[in-house]
Length: 397
Image (cartoon, rainbow, N blue to C red; front, side, top):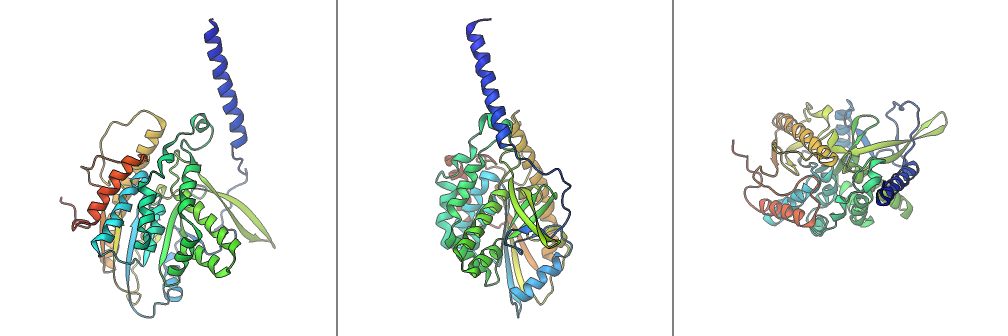
């Protein structure tokens, strides 16, 4: 055996040894106890922060919210914007919103919901055109370049090929305390901002009321409380955008009162798109008929950050591309089914339903195409469409 070959073996063994040592340090130990099958866990200090997407009592709860918290004493228009997942193709949704502003008929939505990259867009969309410049910067300035950086050997031993710190840094860069105060102000007017994650432990979607979290913190008039709310909201947004396999899950600390004490648990949350491609209402409510005295009319706008039809192509034979292709296939199928159900909901409740997505002929972009030049092309395509009279046109059959 040559000296060069011996050195190669030594270097390889050293690299593996270092990686194994590091993996022992970063492996997350989880309790071997059974999963606590209760619904009364909540993030520390925020009892009203969320709800389960599969909760059968949601119609009653949301109707009560409409009547009591939103103080709807008369019929009121209910316009909804639902933002889907799509990774780097969130640049499309960002572009559409800015183009829609330029067109001049973008409504102030009563409710904005977001999943995955749609969750990252949602706070900007909720706060309206005043936040357009920051939304554009987030998706076109190159701030997302680091999201495509591989973690190398470490990705063999921890659940995420890409750098979650880069995703977290992108979120915390834009979600600041002035944004939370603005969200709380709009929440007080009866508007709602909801974001979805997937609780892998419970295997269910979780709907987070971002406005409620912000409002509780602002009402406390405590800088520490506002920081706590910002940290939780950032965690939720990162979790919602954490594509399984690409980014590590986000562990969220929750608690409940029990036997005079407090029980703690750490839940594992990932991309909301695993359970919800986008949402207007949770699965338990899509057959709900809204009481006629709550709304006079409204429109549901669904902004799909990507393509909704199958795109036949050769799948590259590596873990990251197979994972991305599988999730893309799953979410497209879910989105088509959800749109059909949503159309029925709209017809039953006298609400219009419109959706827009990237057309099949657009060849740019992709779930993990985070490079600046690619995201800029996707953004400007969305901008041109948003500013045109074809934005909500029904696709030709």
